[in-house]
Length: 186
Image (cartoon, rainbow, N blue to C red; front, side, top):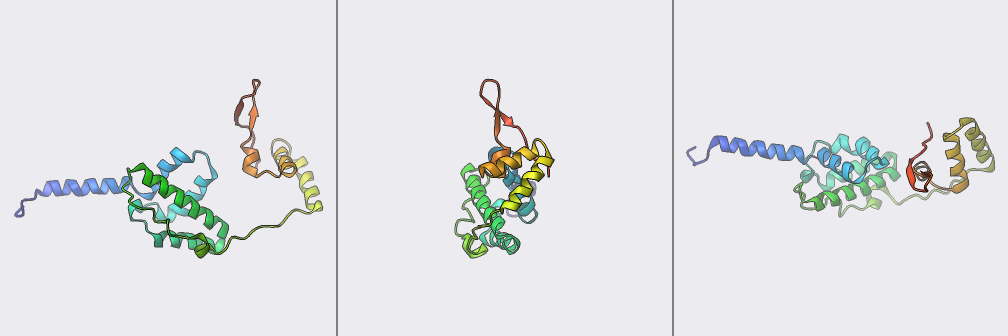
């Protein structure tokens, strides 16, 4: 008061700042990002499983390169491919958050991080199923029944990815696609 400041006004400013920080936590920004950009995608599961525990309560403006590198590096010790995916997701999330201009984010902390330095060089997979393995899988798909068995057979015949087959749309009577129509169990 001697400095000419109203203590109640200072308390209100601090409370408003705390409220702004809660609205711009990593978790709050992720919820907006998922709702707007990722409805029903596998990416959401990765975010919730691998990023929310360590970054969820942090204000997005305070997350820095070191924190991101630590999360990605920790994941890379067990699964380097998933760690690369997490870094790609984080880059996309921070670019989106910055473009929104409502979270106070001035720069993307992922911009200088290189996947090769954290995860090592990408490993290409070259494993293919043998004829005996394909035969066994085909017989297992027969026992599975519809729709799961049909999905696995279509995967073997087409070489498509699981989500490409599961998210396929069945045309209705006029040829327009309906929503995804089958998903295998297990």
